[in-house]
Length: 264
Image 1 (cartoon, rainbow, N blue to C red):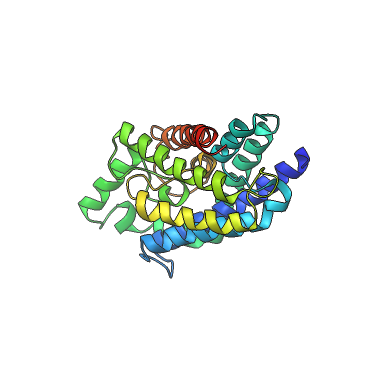
Image 2: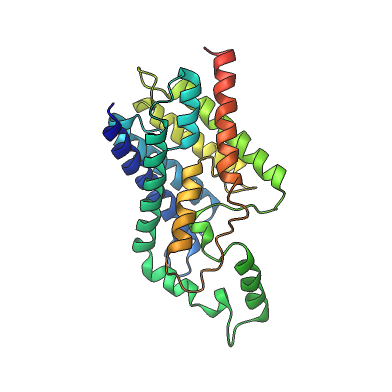
């Protein structure tokens, strides 16, 4: 695979991943959406199908890493670091593009949600809603969950540990079952396996932090949330942002170490 193939494949694949994954979060969250309050099952299966679609689409181009933690793990496993920057650049760019497309697809719903007095407070709204917005302004805004993850209970070491554990499960599943014949990315069967693993992680381990398990999936959309001209959008919670980046990278490195010791 050439560097251009890798960059294009990772950009397209990660954009699809975030478009469909962020899209299901928007569908469940935004007040004017037909899927409003569809629940956690919709989100977990939506993200699983997003992985499946993105991997099937771009595996021939780049091996469909779509996740800096996977790229790091494969570099540790194989000892080849030459294309890591290209993979990471494509993944971050693709995540930002995907988040932007979610905004376009749900433009009217974002506006309706963020101008609703019951959501953002204001004259005639309940005091509790206004106080909630004031708290969100200091951290996570009312639609940040469409773009990136956040903890239900903010305990830094536990939130970090949850992301590490979830990513270890994901990366070990990829390394032991999901690689193509060349061992440099996800194969056809690997796409299905990985999608089901992502659903399993979401159902079992996603509750505490929203299971980023992918630095690009969280960082790229969080940047877009910061930049978009959304009314009453609140904060992007940058104080938490290091956890869904560091946790998956640590988890990917640990998973690669386990693989090299136990399976190689």
